[in-house]
Length: 278
Image 1 (cartoon, rainbow, N blue to C red):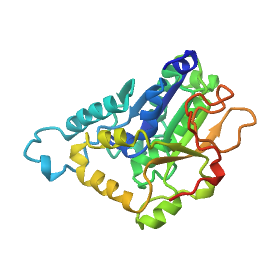
Image 2: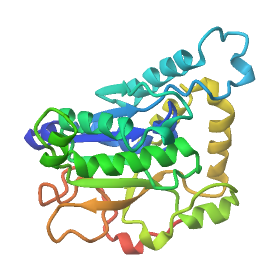
Image 3: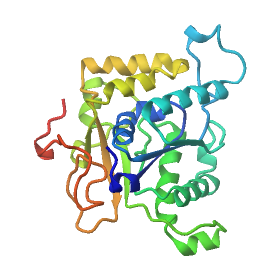
């Protein structure tokens, strides 16, 4: 049920390609959307340089980017995203743009949306894809600069400055990576994980969103097989920045502290430090 506080809360997720939102923080998006938080998604590219799964090769015709954008629209609907927007950059080019156009585009959207919490990839982008790395760095810069009046004026960015309260990096625990024996992936030290979101009730929604990305079927089939070795029903974050006073503890609610108490998880993990990564 919505209340006055949930109506005020806004979550912004910033990703590089269609499917990043579902492979990454999809369960978190679904959880908070269901609780009445306004959730927004920015996707920098349409993923037009990616591969297409053989199962749909016969159906596919034309522009892969348009195909993948339609997949994302279906996934966004399942996750309950209020608004999704493409930033219009070419796939594979974000590193060429992140210090100027990309960052400024994200700043403009932060000012417009006014989120309290922003989620993006950790600095190495998990897969170490250059676009993932670029979107992480651009979003981090935008997080700070969107609240800087002088920067906005110097760069002719219109709108009233807005400082989001938390910046969260979506991460994979190093202990998970060790069990999965994945190469060319960036694991995050377990001790630096600040936020664990329980998505057990939303996991089926996350899977349904993943399956909207039929062009990437090979990837999500491989992803789902990881359940044999690790528990995918939790999503992990490093709180890269928080402007909430005296706020340095672990959390299981990404909005915790913003209203001085949690309003979303009735059945929270009571003691984060007793939580065991499986």
